[in-house]
Length: 72
Ligand SMILES: [Zn+2]
Image 1: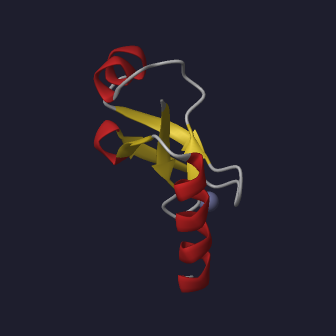
Image 2: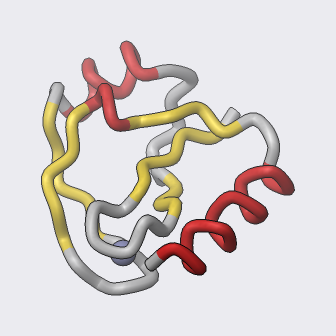
């Protein structure tokens, strides 16, 4: 399962590179808050573990990010 965070700037889905299975494990590894840089807009923001979503379907994810791009 992949963990993703939605970029605060461009709403791109940033995939977490950590090999963790869930948010609890992520919090243990990186703390409750951590900095992430978006691949799309190169803006670094601070995110909370609660911002992290589990991404089970890549296909669905791609559709969603495309839809969001229209909204911006
Ligand atoms: Zn971004």
